[in-house]
Length: 469
Image 1 (spheres, rainbow, N blue to C red):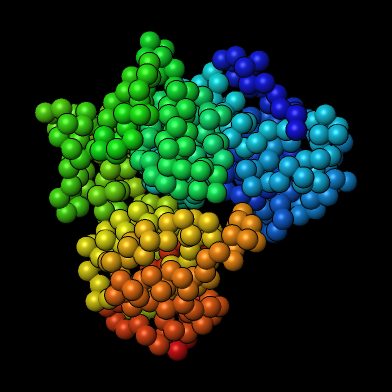
Image 2: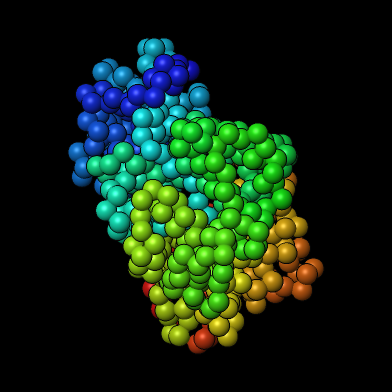
């Protein structure tokens, strides 16, 4: 695969005007946003994806030529750069064709990293909370008239979806550890919200994950050049990650020893800097984890020039993201919420927050495991993460990226068995239509139904809300 050398660009901005970029996997949230940003910067943009979607329609409406034809013959003759998502196989027909034609091939993260050069770039990393924190930060910066360019791997209606082209030199991006993608970034300001075991189909151990985050942190420039890192104070891996860094390092957390300390009582959150209270705000989203994410966004926004008054007002007006504790509706007195949580820590934290905030008669969670490898590696942790739920319904595991061998190594029934062994009322059901029927029969007024997972489990929430008894 042919790649341009990022070092050859130095600190100069990447110039895309007039160049033809073709995106393989353009229907994804990040890829579609990056395509729109490149189009706004004057590039000629086209792309392909394996299926039609609302995103494909949106891209066509924006004047981008997109197709489900992924053949080598469909790759236009004037393409100068091929951009691929992390999920695209190197043997993909258009990737092979591009290599034969000596067309430069970039992964999504490589191109996004190059777009950071010559700009004030913020990269938000962590096992959990990246999308929420990136979106909150983006919303604050927009409300404070700092006019950032944004790319986030989720849909936040208040910032225009998952991307935005601003008029300033600020660029804010979610930095994902999958495939070590964030090693391609060039942040001026980096955030590491937390680090836990995940993506164990990519990493061999937690130690490898910690080293990967440490390498990301080392991408931040020297303190004399304005480089900063804001990192979780309480996590056990903080010191191995920050050892030897020459950027400015500050910590954030709930402990009194943190440089920036978060306090939460009911829905009132408070941010301390040392002994000084710098900001209070009422969090519209439940849970200490959301207050922590908001505080990390607030500290970064203030570093970029936003006032504490503007930051507090923006946070109180933030309405959240799609699939992050998203209020879907109510059916006959049963409230339905959808959430993207797919890691044990996310599940435990989110369900506890919803139980405290919503105070349901019963909390019924429909959890769709995401990836067989993740489910197998973290099976015991998953089983321990549903203590706040009264009933757990588990459909089949969402199959993505894993091998057929991995697919047969663990099933949804294995997770249900572990849950039952812990005294949790749990059942394995499939297909989705059967789960909707079960919810129709079992739910009663005052219940809370939470659909949860990184796959297509949200369809159950929608079908349940429109179903007729």
